[in-house]
Length: 635
Ligand code: PRX
Image 1 (cartoon, rainbow, N blue to C red):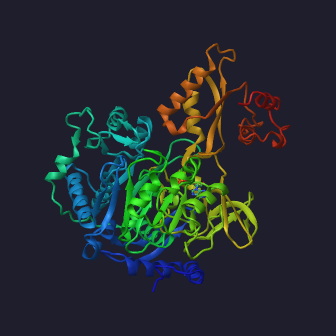
Image 2 (spheres, helix red, strand yellow):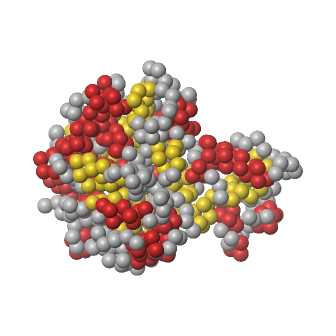
Image 3 (tube, protein in one colour):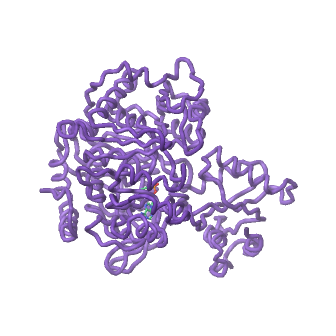
């Protein structure tokens, strides 16, 4: 037996040992016992991190949607697969059974085929959190098209960049979306983006808000009439284990967003296995992850992981604050949620409104609470534990990344004793290590360093779309033969890991990864701006917020600075999205630079965080005098 379901700590250690001593045997057993294959593999794993090249389940053939849907039909046809909770609490929830999901995915897949989408084509999905989002993802996978979901809160420029990078031939979208009391004109954003995207041949539009939109003749089509005509039967396309399943963009510290490529078999096995164990999912449980499917958390733990286990997964269209800050807890009560997975930024936002709205609802169905996306601070951890979990539901602080595809370091609830702010132990099959700045591995416990992974795991991204060299440089060059995560971490006296945060220039704002470079680029395009530098600073709700130091071309710039601040934020909103707007903008005469001309962000970070007495040595700077002037004008 492959120990698909781990139930106690001793078993965790035993299975973990097997997974690192005999990784191939271990993953082969999991693959054989729990999944449907059209053809088995010739080799479990081949790898070389120096290239880097990783192949799991070489030459195996399968289709992931047969594993997510078809194989459940014999026993779970009438079980709810997707439970859709609309933005408006007065609109009825929809229970989509596995049978209905099968029919709707097949119809959608047939529409894609009719519209000329073929295996290997890229399809951009820019759809809000409505059932069509999950269904379109699965429909692509059904016919072997590579989905590239773009979060439907991104701007038209961000959307266009991603469409062009992946050379997509179709966009799936909706007329608009609901977000609390607001509506968003999604189709308008798509139209604007497509002015810059010659590769797009077809746009399929789901109707959600019934708004008046423009439909471009010969390019745009309403989705529903096409679905109505399509057959509910569609044979799944045979895929190779290493065929790309999807591309998902993540911000880098420099340049273009990186299109991380995930492939089929390894991703399937690892997301399924982590879901089962990290949530201790049992057959009649109702599971809810509040993320958007536009992020990796939604891909792996709203769509694929839960459906691979025949679970009931909630898809929530709305926001935590509408109609009031009790919305999450109202949903937990209404649908008897057993596992609840959210981000620290949401927890902090809710905690700010006190416990009254939590206490109003019956949360006794909850068994497991999850956290993901950034380090969870101690205060938020306790608030979550005391008020939501009533000290009886373990919190799993799950550390992972878009690049890792699935959870890497996390407690297993009711198995691993938790410790606030610690992601605790590596998941089965994961071999983390901590490195010092000289490239030496730090052995033993009570050490702090850069977090790397020494050995391949099945759901790791295989490349960056169209730029394998960048993949190699970003992840496999800092430390020889190791995957570098970009995060710092410490290991305590019992071997538990605590993630201390990014060591590169990525800032996590409300759980969204933002690279400093694209934001600085957007600011610098303003005609009045000479140069800028962005750093993160601690923020009660967002975790980190953005502080910008901006140097104007004309120091005596006569315009009102508040207007300039607005214009700068407007430019950022248009280029990247409102999430990247700066909380504080300080106009300064210069930036602290090293002699080689590099901005010393360390100093700017300290000033933004009000840690002025702890600036370290500034004497080696090219312009040490600027530091005092920045401090004097701090906001
Ligand atoms: O810095 C880590 C932080 O989020 C980064 C990955 O972001 P992204 O690719 O958007 O994926 C987020 C969802 C998996 C990581 O490099 N991060 C994620 N989870 C945690 C975390 N930091 C601390 N604790 C976590 N549990």
